[in-house]
Length: 290
Image (cartoon, rainbow, N blue to C red; front, side):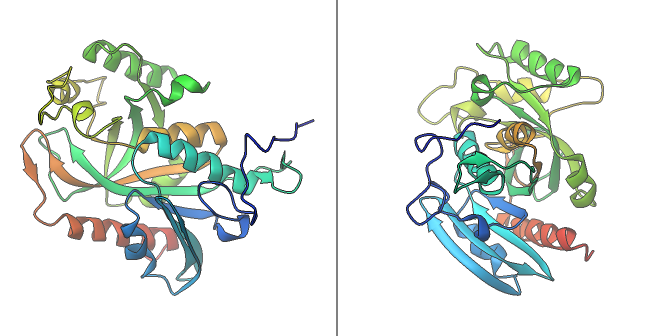
């Protein structure tokens, strides 16, 4: 029999909402679009036919409504896999924990969670303004050192290959995204494998006043090949989403607007236009209107 979850482990606010996200179970749709930037929530929800909930706390801004007959939630996360660990744990609790009894529900509910965000290319052939779906997420962060996850032999090989190439003190983790959502959302998009970095500057090989410990990080990642597998782009959340999604039993997929190419040293002339194209693609694919 499941044990009651103590108040100190799962914090519920006095109004019945969950601690960080400030959401109640009835505020959450079964389809969730996530973005890093809180200002991007309204850019998506303004396309909705109706909105029945708006809420915010810290960097977490949520709008729930309907688009072409489909109810969905748009939710901002802030940056980094530390925020994603909070987000995914609390989203899961909203649908899989009874807040009255503090017991896990006997029937598991799986959410469809689609991240849309900006990303940088680490392949010269992947141009700015292209749209990409992440088949795999590869974490250069240490989040999964604190959980016991399961990986395929190929995923282990990817992590070990990057570990050796970069000379890291830990082994990166590699997790595939949702095959179901890939089939639904991937039409017309490039398919890639996304590296998740625990920072924007040094962890992505950028030098401002500090010299990165791995100054040729992008070049080393660019050269990795395992059969026809290569690393295409990088950002700061995807691997955390995929790893937590696997642990908690949710369908998760990451979609990316490529706004920079680190090999060619180019940046998009109109990143907002690329993001808007990705937003429209996401909404239409979710409602099956394309």
